[in-house]
Amino acid sequence: MAKEILIIILASLVIDLSFGELPSSIHPVVWMGKLIETLKPLFSHNSKHICKIYGFIMTFSLIFVFVSLFNLLLVFLSFNQALFIIASAFLLSTTFSVRTLLKSAGIVAKDLGEEIEKGRKSLSFLVSRPTSKLSLQELVSATIETLTENTVDSVLAPLFYIILFPILGTFFWSIYFSFFLQMGLTSPYQLLTLFVVGAGVSYRVVNTLDAMVGYKDPVNINIGWFPAKLDDFLNFIPARITGLLMVISAFLISLDYKHSWKIMLKDARKTPSPNSGYPMAAAAGALNVQLHKPGTYKLGKPQIDLTSNQIQDAIKLSSVTIILFLVIVSIFMLVILP
Image 1 (cartoon, rainbow, N blue to C red):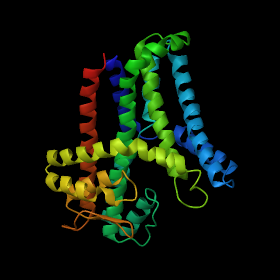
Image 2 (cartoon, rainbow, N blue to C red):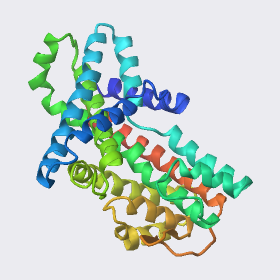
Image 3 (cartoon, one colour):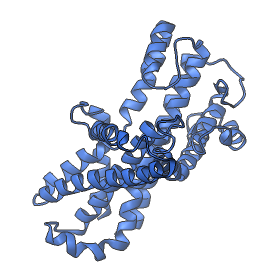
Image 4 (cartoon, rainbow, N blue to C red):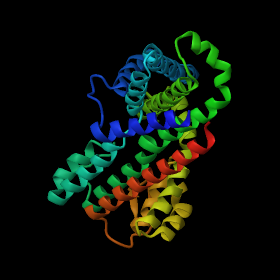
């Protein structure tokens, strides 16, 4: 089973790296966003406690809807093994984003190298903070921050749960297999594939909810309370794994891994988020720069000035971190799974 599951996961990565994001008209995450926007106003003017309860209900309702849709489609296609694997890889590729993450940071670096206004515009598509008055160093800092933070949210965290669930599934498949057998599944690996896809979709629902309603403004503070807390919980372990792997990656590509480790331990908890500081601080230390969000945090020491060259180094650091994670978990899956 391990080989089949690993083939599906690696195939999904190949699809993402080859083609990037789907058109918005058919992208599941866009559908999630539209459904969230439709549901959110229904309880936005109720009491604090009702809104929090509604946020809880909305979270698990969306998970149920999208996991069910994805899995029912796979069950329908399970009569043909090749079609099942291709569809599984394709659906799974929509739950994370490697190519777009790295490419977006690269575009900002390129644009900053040509004209600062062009770089400001490119960065404005990636961050929520206003970019029109940011200096070159502030623009570079913001780019590295969003790149390293989203190395967790967009890549390692969804992959962590995509890989964790088939391992958990080996303990539970015998309980559920008879039920799914009646729906058309013919082998244990197909059932584990449902676990894999369901894990990726579930994480993406929670992360999308956090991105859309996880704010402390009057409209979202109560509805978004539960999905924001759940997103923090789900990212807790992946963020720390990412920080550690960034330190190791810094060693592998001859960056300052000792400083990376030191700054991660020292500054990771300075961010408002309990998780985002780990990859950002590890990157700041590895690059020997200070990442600074005015009025919010300072990570690392400003040993060298921030330029677009540091964005390229951060892209390399994130890329090696992702590769290292995939190598480790591939070996782990082959050893653990039957």
